[in-house]
Structures are given as structure tokens and as C-alpha cells.
Image 1 (cartoon, rainbow over the protein chains, first blue to last red):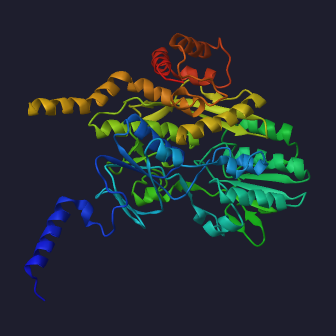
Image 2 (image 1 turned 45 degrees about the vertical axis):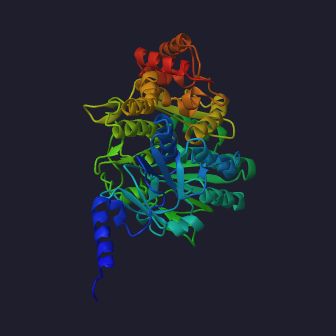
Image 3 (image 1 turned 30 degrees about the vertical axis):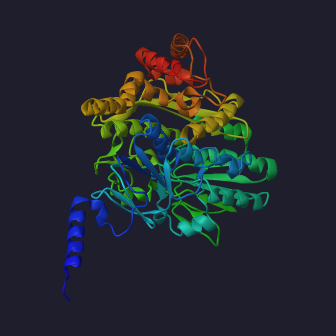
Length: 425
Length: 101
């Protein structure tokens, strides 16, 4: 076979093009052609969606933002325990991404990321690739099923839901509680910290007890906690269990679930086997798989270390990590993800203009826990970057509610509306 | 003539950037942004929590100082206020006062 002049020219042009424009070297096509400066954000939860909105808003729409999310809609994990108690439905927690598109001009791509090339600065999906100048990943958490014998993603989806990402498993767990006989036992297995939403498992015990008290009063909630003690709002949760649900919530510390038996409906700890009617085992967590694809997991093989002035990864340049996946002495909460997202958004805009980000980022976090359909309590702290320690340090004055109250229960509901507006509207 | 025309266009393109920089103190903007989860984007609360957008700056700063000292009771703000400086209250107050409801 010989090359004629035309073929030779084609090859030559292709060769030059590959050298000059690395983007053309991909086997797949560009999903949205990149023109000008672009940030790609992977993960449209509290952190990712907030970063998308705020980069558009604060750059006066100058920076192109593509948000990649696998789910068609946003479902709030905060307050999703109230679906178990029955005071909310999963629909109440579901929102559209439409306003991010229409009002802010965020380009939404629905799909699963298959690979991230930090050298070529591109994100790969089944339908093609997206080039970026800066990448923000907001991968949330994934579950370390391998640490619990007998548990895996399929078992969780079908019979032993963790329900630690709001959605189908939340609804499944609620249905299991509805099907449980009066006098039954529901086990909640809590992993060792750090995990998403420190007070969440204890709030869940309250919400399940609330449902059972009103519908199946002879039933019990057994909390098997891998931690040596209640990790958040301890006194407030103990008071709620004792006063609102007397005799219904049993708490065992240092009780790490190591094994489940699906057919026998049994969970095992180091010390005992427990048979129950409903099993809700929350596995240990690590940064979501997107962080592994980006190669930025560098703490305990689980979390991602970042520069707290920009949330840029300590591993790769131009890759930023926000939310639960970050390794920090910060609570893994929805509110915190939005606070980190805003610091990251501001820093990304500055860095893309060759400017330095704010050297002392200062952020807040408030988390409400609903202990019934009407009462709640909170934990609140502000955090300031300490350059010497290279860490976010809790400021003076933070703490928890003096007591649970209906006033805070109402505020928790308003918080949900305001934070969802802040993230998506 | 051509040069002048190009210059006018260049300045025109830069103007929004220049204006944006002049308008907003970014430290103030970023501090205020952390209030938004409860109080709404740019302080525009949809309910439950006080509307901070357009709030008189002097009033805002006085409230924050009263939360900090304990003079004004609160569910959350007596805690969060203690971590901020008076200078930061001033910055946030200026930012919120400039926001439309």
C-alpha cells in the first residue's frame, strides 16, 4: 500500500493537530466544545451544585461551567431521616436542576464519569469527553462494603439498606418499617467516625422510634455503634430517647457490625449475633469513587487532602475537591459542603485570573437534627483557616442547643428551604 | 481612527470587570456567603430566618455585637457570632446593606 499525496497531507495535518491541540487526541468526541475558560464540576450534590451556581454568579457569567451529575434530579440527604419518621416524603426533598441551567447558564451533563485524565485535563463519560481548565470534584462518599462480611451494594439496594444517600434506599427502609410487626426490632449499625453527617444516625434512631411509637409501640430500635460513644449532640439525643421514646431506644457503644446474614436477618458484632426484623447497617465510608478516578485520594486510602484556601488537591494541580471527600477536622455535612464550595468558587475565579485567593477563608456550619415531627436541636460552629497549622480551626463560641425545642424544629424546616434555594435557585 | 475605535472597544470590554472589582469587597462577599444556607443567597431569606439583604448596616453590626455579648438571646447566633471580629461584622454589614430584597 502506498500513500498518495492526499493521504499524506491528511496524516500530516492530523499529526500537527495532535501536537498543537491535545484535545484532538481523544478517541471520543467533545460533549460540549470548549471555548474560553472552563470549569468542569463532577457531582451535583450540595457542594457541586453550589460551586456551579456561585462560579457563574461571581464571575459575572464569564467562566463556562459544566456540571456533570448522574442523577436526573437533586435529592436532599439532610432531613431525609424524616421520611422514615413519616413527616416528609422523598418528593418533598427532591428538586430540579433547571434553575441552574436557565438562570445561571450552568451546562448540565447527565452521565457517569468513567475516567479523569489530569494530564490532558479532561473528564471522560460514555458519551464523550469534556476538557477543563480547572476541575472541581464533589464526589460525596462511597461505602466500604468489604469491611462487613455478607454486605455489598446489591444487598444494600435490595434487603439491608444503608439509606445514607437519600433516595430509593430511604423509601425501601421506610417500607420495611411499615411491614414490620408490632413488637419487632430495628437495628441501626453505625460505622466508626469519620462518616457523613455525624449526628445523622442518632437522629435516625429518633425518627424510627417516632414512627414506631405512633404505629407499633411494642417495637424497639437497637443502636449498634462502632464508636466508643455517641459522636454528636450526646446529651440532647440521650434526653430525647429517654423522654420522648422511653424504653424504645437501646444504645450499645463499641458495637461494630462486622457481618450480616441476609436470610437469617442477623447482624454480628465482635461480641454477639443480633436477630432483627429490619436491618439498617450503615457501612464505613470513603471519598466517592470520582476521587479515585482523579487520583486525589491520599489520606488513609480514604480521603483527599486539600489546600484550604482553594480546595485544590494536594496531589494534582487544577483539581479541586469539596464536601464529604475532603480530609479535615470539619463535619461532613450538607451545609459544610456549601461553605467549602463557595470558598472554592471564589478561589477558582481568582486563580483563573492569575490572582491569589483569600488567605484566611472563614466559614460557618449549622446542623439541625429532628428528634420527632416537631422538635429539633442544632450544633453550630464557625471555622477559620490557620496558615501555620494548615488547618481549619473551630472558632470560639460554637456548640449545641441548650435543649431541643419546637422553635428549632420549625427553623430546621426553614433551613431546608433556604439551603436548597441557596444551592439550586 | 482605527486605533481609537479598537481602544474604545477594549475599554468597553474591560468595563464590567473594572466595575465588578470596584463594587464588591470580596472578603465581605465571601464572609456573607457562609450565612446563606440559613439566611438565603445574598441574605434573601425565603422565611423563618431574618432577611439580611438591605438591612441597615448599623443595625446589623449592633445585633451581631449583642449576640456576641449575650445582650440579645438567640438559638444559634450567640454561638456563631463569637467567632467573628467586629471588623468582620462591619464587612458583612456593608455587604448585606448593599443587597436588594
